[in-house]
Image (cartoon, rainbow, N blue to C red):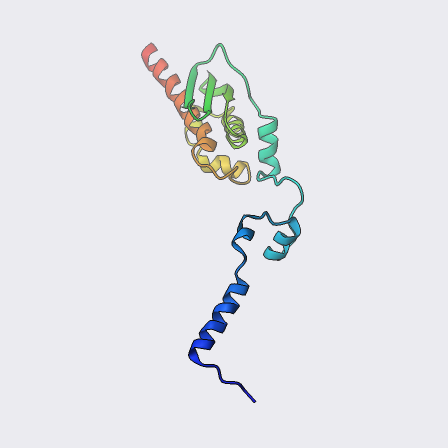
Length: 176
């Protein structure tokens, strides 16, 4: 036999169920254990620190190519915002219309170092016109993915390359 519940009592019963389902407000500030998070997301999570960079990006950020200064540079660029810590300097030496040597120094995040390193790898040996056509997308493709979530600092390599080429072209125009 089914028991009839009045409207008031049914509403009260639903409210009590809702209160039982809601976590205590104090629980909102408790850190979940690794196992609780795995259960919640329904999959096994990696243990230890999580690396958000692929192997190629990690390699270029820990072992950057073409790092250093150049005293006999034909073109130079200094870009970035020193107030936030993201700065890059890039030097190019031109020989026979090609980028014979390229060096950089960066004081940014691992993603910024990796993209700057890859930019120098892509630009070395290219003609000025070929180097001007290198895009941020080319660097991301070469690194097999976008390093990190930020946008501007990780793509400063191309900006610096174009600025250094511009500096070289301006110096050459003045010589003519």
